[in-house]
Length: 596
Image (cartoon, rainbow, N blue to C red):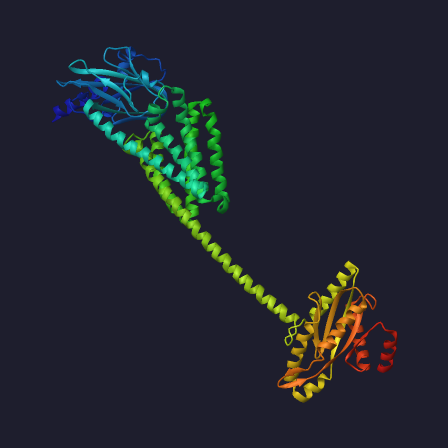
């Protein structure tokens, strides 16, 4: 036991003392290699100067500086540096070709050195597609392993950004099958985006709701971001332009953040409902679009941090806005929260990968999976939003109609009460209070138009005898009949009112001469001369009429009414069933003697 322990300790010390004994195991080149992750069998060494050559790293002391990766995917987080990788492939009796795939398309420069060669196969988004060893959205390098046994390959990786180098080994047949399936899924993804964009663009033109236009722009920006991160942009849109590839890397995130904030404002209607939240979203929008034109000119390290700071701010701001609107009762916000939760989780995993989280299915495809769910849920949310707004509009219209109906009822009630307050309940004629208002208006019009008008007071002769002999009910019926006949004696613009009892007042406007009022007085005497059939009786009555004139007799309504009353008593003194003017000096003298 003591000897065995001694041997184990000596072997451990030897392993520490001799770096070669700690080297990663070789990758066995089998006939069937369906995307084998080989990160754990790769060794790496950072090159702080960036000046080492393949010859340098293949000899001591540099060759002893490699350390095992120990994970399936090498991810050193954000770096502005150069890393050398060493991969040992052990070939048996099988024959290739095999392919090494580097599955992170945002690396700047890759140089892959076969055994004994100083001329590399190149890749990276700073390399034109036509210069790469194989065309693919990822970076592919052929592995021939010319010698039986162990073949040592080196790879130089230079990037300013996330130093993530996920590596898989394929045989050709497995690669072709996997890529065919992958192309189908990615095609379905982009097809979904295109269909949802076209559908919602159509809805925008139909319903003219800006939220649909904002949705289309946001989904387009999301598709652009995904295309940058999965390599489709570099493969199909800018295959020969490294400059555009550099710009797209740093511009995609601000573009998505800005359009997401715009869509959020429109969908959640923050401007009208949550002004504080709306200002936050506006700030995110302005920051995003202010960053777009300058990202190319800023240092890549700075743009990396600005992009991630903006992305985190957008996630917090947009999702916080959704939570606030949902808590305040805006039901379509539920769709928004679920949709953005999916894409925010995927985006968060992508950000975490950029800071060193090992690459995996979720870090690589989380944004695509989340965004596919998002575009469908957001479209459903837009539909629900339209229905909600329509219901709210219909409810508001119903409430407005109810308020209008209530207002009309109140108005009718007020008008009815006003009418009752201003009209005699028996005859329906204006009462004393409305008469005074009409007199004031008549004075104002006469002053303005420089015209004359008359006030005629009519008192029924011997009406008290009817009340005393036949009763007040019959007297009231007679008054109604008298009011109807008197109403036919005047023009539409004139006024007839009942003062009370058996007294009626006429306001006759726009007179050309005093004789005009005399014509009306004679007409009144004439229409009342015909007996009234009331309660089975033929009743007779006659009027005594007193007339005052404006402006001859005065300009104050109260005095005009008083003077008409004086003139009416003159008519009674003259034998009734006649009329008298207030301004007649002889009648006035006779009336004064009668009063005395």
